[in-house]
Amino acid sequence: MLEITKENIEKAIEKAKATKPKVRVIEFRRYSVTNKTTGANYEVTFTKIGGKKFADCSCPATKICYHIGASIGAHIVLAEQMHTATA
Ligand SMILES: [Zn+2]
Image 1: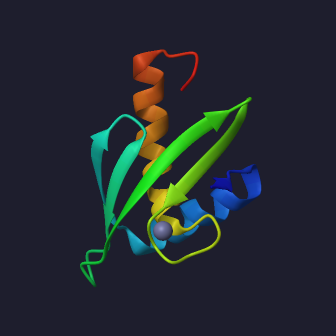
Image 2 (image 1 turned 90 degrees about the horizontal axis):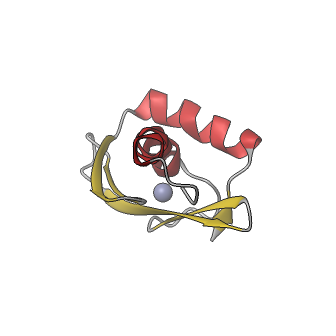
């Protein structure tokens, strides 16, 4: 699991904006991210533990990747809609 920080998620979001992958919601906190150019598909999962946010991606990256950057926008919107304290 990778911890999300303000710095690393900002970089990931920038990369996602450049790459523009397709994000599909599997369920709350689980997203499917597809690279439109290569067709590569990965699954991103978000977790919150003790006030810290973590993310996992099924791609080979060992840091917060652009798949996570692409998913977090959708995740924030969903979390706000659900009004869950644990989002
Ligand atoms: Zn990834």
